[in-house]
Image 1 (cartoon, rainbow, N blue to C red):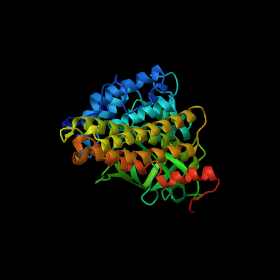
Image 2: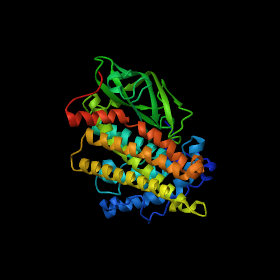
Image 3: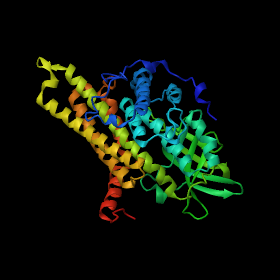
Image 4: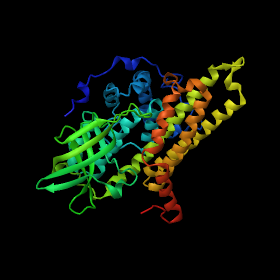
Amino acid sequence: MVAPAESRSDVAPRFAELPHPHLELDPDVGHIADFYEYGALLTDQEQAILHDLRGYLASDVAPAVNAAWAADEFPMQFVRGFADLELAGLPYGLSKRLDGPARRLLMGFLHAEIARIDASTNSFFGIHSGLTMGSIHAAGTEEQRERWLPAMARMDIIGAFGLTEPHGGSDVAGGMETVARRDGDEWVIDGEKRWIGNGTFADIIVVWARDAEDGKAVRGFVVDRDTPGVTTAKIEGKTGLRITQNADIRLEGVRVPDDRRLSGGQGTFADTGGVLRRTRGNASWACVGVQMAAYELALSYAKEREQFGRPIAGFQMVQDALVQMLGNTTASIGMAAQNAQLIDIGGGSDAHSALAKQFCADRMRETVALGRQVVGGNGIIIDNGIARYFGDAEALYSYEGTREMNTLIVGKRITGHSAFVR
């Protein structure tokens, strides 16, 4: 097993070299990007949790992310910082910060806040708390929940989620090539996974595999990363989400006991789909956070940058871009917030979450492009901030369901006709 989070000390001093530019980082100051004040939907207790997160992000995360992004590395000190905030267990009632499970609305604002500072760091948190813990919570037995979730809530154990494959992304449900074969009291897993966030350093990986016996059932397994037969290789050369440590994972004759099979669910892809339905909503909030940052960076720059003897914020075309950015951000917050509230009251559907992800990602792509435009040539330099969001947005645009797949999910819901190719 990888060393517990509290003993991990591979913290590189260079990660403190480049400050996060321009953003208002005072935790007591509301965001100018929340123009319609959607944050007021949170209770005082929820706002206190958000306030503490803002303080930590301002003091510890923001100063490190530009250099970490350039270095293509994840600052391991972030693990202990998030653990101290007791955020990972919030959705499952495993945090002392709340009496019960957190509302999806609160989790959405938390994801947006993290992504506002760094989308990769939000990806790390979402993979651990949302995808991995969510899989164990949704598809595991009570004994399995007790076995792993409290330690994961403390972040003593870090998780990764192994679904996507080299030849299967959007169609992985029907084309999963990783297989698990029953052998007495064990399962033998063979296959490959790709784009697995946290995959280079996670302690456990929830691996989804097709049951070799019937070729249809999809089962989840909690696999220790150091299990014989598991090899991981970092994916190099990314132009977005560079702090996220994505891995190619090979599983060759990996043996796991039957008590590591998530046996509390249906044993079908519906188990996986239920987890993705919830995390797709979180992805829309990540798109919100990136837009908030892009707008705030562009607005701050426009007020400071002078051309022709005055700040460019006074130019009509710059104001047009800024207002479009603000409108995109505001609309995205509204859609993400309403989707979260529908889920909180027991409503919401795949189509609701799919539309939120599709819409917010579309608006994000436009917003970061407009922000890069406002900042001009300086917008391609990492330490000016906007370049990192511009790159990260392209990755967010595709993950947790591409635009095309989410469009077809919503299209089927509103027309009653499936346009998926079989």
